[in-house]
Length: 512
Image (cartoon, rainbow, N blue to C red):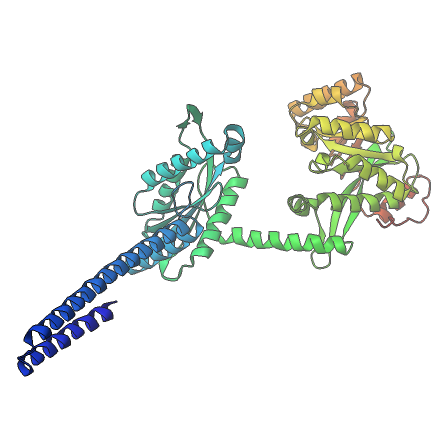
């Protein structure tokens, strides 16, 4: 529009000069030409004023558009609930902070913070209260950390802080993390409700000269997860071992999926003996991962990961099916015990799945013992009672595993029809020298005798432990003293060597 204004001025000057030339050349027509020039001058002035008005309007429009773009940029980088930076805004501002820290010879630290029990606040009090809590937390963190920190809410209950720190003073980052945790865990009053949450924090640190914000944030997240899993009330520093463990965890995840498709998970059998006669009365089935490179992998490595992946039910059913198929032709007096994960006990169709395995393998229901841990009963006792009742109606026997380690043992014994009580190995490890362990095992045995329920003791690994539990009246025992978990072929041989009926060739589980 500025070009239009210039053209108008040029036209005015040109028309004005023409006007004066015409006055000099034609004196007789002065009046008529003067009127014509006056009109032309008026029109040019109007054109100039019009152009100027257009120019001013366009300037205002440009300013409004620029202001709108600035507001859009702020909205794109700001969390609408807390007023803090969002993930994109944090990445941009942390990068700027890193560049400034590099010029000043400083390092960069990122703190990852997760609020504990925030979901329960939303569920209990509603999302409006949850949003108010987020704003209160944001204000408290901003006040606690000051202007030098870039603070963001990355997702529902996750926050992050970026700080420029002196390489010689690593404690400053930890102090900031503690201040942030204190701000988060402050007692807040919202709508006349007193609300307090917990927090876990992880810290990652790197020289600002070559830092990559996504990598540093990921490491802080890893440290925070370690704090969370360890229920640490203090910030946890990242170290390289955490990342290696995470990589190993990822490899285990991939390996489990591959192993399930290629039959790498197999049953091992741990013998259970009558403590009076020494006769084998059963085997407990334990899962083993036969890895082509790592060899035999113990369940404490892969079971928690399988539970996280939601694959524990599939893995358990596969191992149980193979175990039942191998043991179906063993001595009919020998029971087979299988463990049920707490996660599986939340499956309303669990009883039907187990009955299907019995049907497919032809294994008698009265030879199967399903072991359920005390802790798994806490989540939904009504569903557990329904599953237990369905299994009992099919003739399956039930064992209460790890007895004494839960919180409501007596109520479980009273409300659920267990056929066996298994005393946890933690009470047996030092039973020959610990009076408290002796007292606990004696009390459980006395209680079980009154209820007419036999007791099986786990973890017998020495002659002294064997003698101690035998003297306390326990009926059945298992542990490495009697034999380590073994493949099905060795278990079958063990039965033959001890005079049991010789089994036929083992079957394989039916596909399904």
